[in-house]
Image (cartoon, rainbow, N blue to C red; front, side):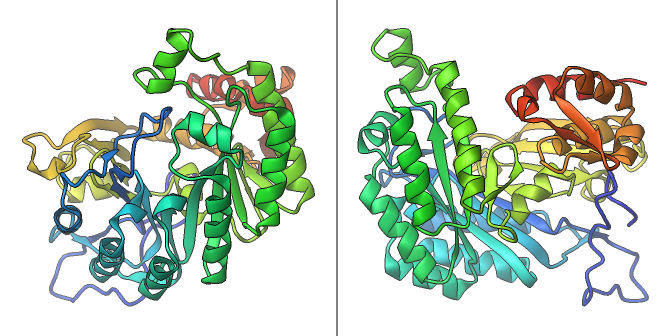
Length: 414
């Protein structure tokens, strides 16, 4: 099917999937799948992702069946399945489903079989993980657990509205590693009241536990969340920008010194343990997204084969879509709440923009194709980007002003 936008490589074409001589060629579906499970034990004070408390009002079995129904709905006669290279089940908190999560993994990979060596990631929160569940997930084909640790300071965890304490988080990390899973930990910095020393202790402790991947996110105050209301009413101090910058800098220093290389603005990994699924997002690969509130991205050929755009709309090379924030969006009259099409120049600029989230940056070829060379040169002049070895890369200062980098690239027209 040619090359993905931005020169990221061929899409589909996996061995073992042949078209009979008397059938017209069918377009391969993406080889990356995201599944959203919009349930949590309870809502955290800072979270604005689509999810609701798992209070018994929604049947786990019904949710799993509906999710599988959504996936089957993509299997039109005009497309063909290819083995999945990555499957990511996020949320929400997928592990609240318990044994139903195991069923979901098994059924998903029956509908969309896995390629050899596929990465299968499940997001988890410590309070909903047991040794029995870990063993069942491994047996079902899960290879990686992304754990919402967020902090190893108990007072900070209470402020964030988390349902676990630090000791439980570390126990789950060790249990997951013992079960044979790759383990990533999410951490939040810049939380009001968290001292720099406590932050350093969290970083050291999570690395000491043996994780192969760490994501570090600055606390974002989102409108409508309990934390935003507390700040607006003066009951909580807002995050301190200087303290947040210092915490991000400390994370880079500590994690890289401990053997986890920074490969994306917020992500660090032991070499060879980078998230292949998330890297697909940042490098322009199409992916299916299913579940309430999920997003996905298709190339133009896939979108035309699925009837999302007219067959004669050949100028559309990329389609992004989002499902309505509803537990069962497929039952709505209009299940898609977001739909965006892109031309080739727009898609190339997007690839250049997203590529600058990565420490490897983008190649000269992509910058030229995207018409972004002038923007890159202006960013070099401002100390936000460096140009060397045929690539444009963010500087340390550029990490702190990522939005400026993205805005200039996206607005570039040459």
